[in-house]
Length: 251
Image 1 (cartoon, rainbow, N blue to C red):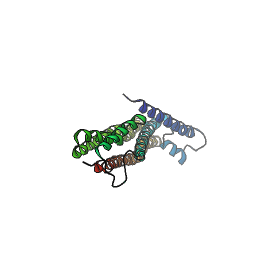
Image 2 (cartoon, one colour):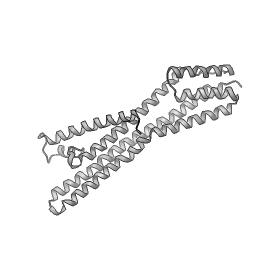
Image 3 (cartoon, rainbow, N blue to C red):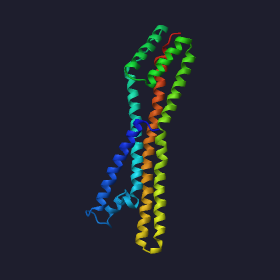
Image 4 (cartoon, rainbow, N blue to C red):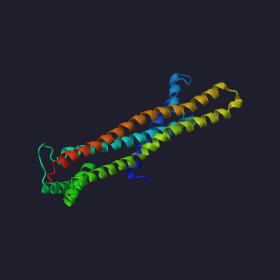
């Protein structure tokens, strides 16, 4: 079952891809450009003839925009969580040692902070680390809690990226489907011996794969950048808590 946020992203993708395809088809069907000119050929390549394969490009654009919106949303989420480093939830000055009562107080302050704002990886690490130290007084157990929570958050991030990974597979698959349909159409008219029509049909067939592969390359780079930012965020947050909380606790 899709969540409300995902439905909104899909809706935006449908709108943007539909508007783009309508503009392309309007330009192609108009008398502005010669039908055998290079501009018309580019319009067909991009999906300017909806009936003769343009619907495949429309689906491809929709999947691309949906993926792009997902990536943009997750990057914005990481950026928002990184801003919590400026909230001064932990003492960052060197030489500051934390006594047991200070650790407990930090945990309480973070709980109040979460009620006022929201839960993030940083607040969860601090809160649970303080709670673990209060119950066990063991630094090693605190570090174990930090590792477990960070791994769980990383797993959740992987889950949130599942739609993107599926669409990365779906986009080139749509291109190949368009090519198969185009080749099938070309074979159906092979008996007509109209080589211009056959080659034109084959050209449109391979257009869908070309567009899909180009969009896949762009999307793969954006997804790789998202994964890099996600990994760096987890490492930075974990390092921040260890450096400014765990290493300063006076046992």
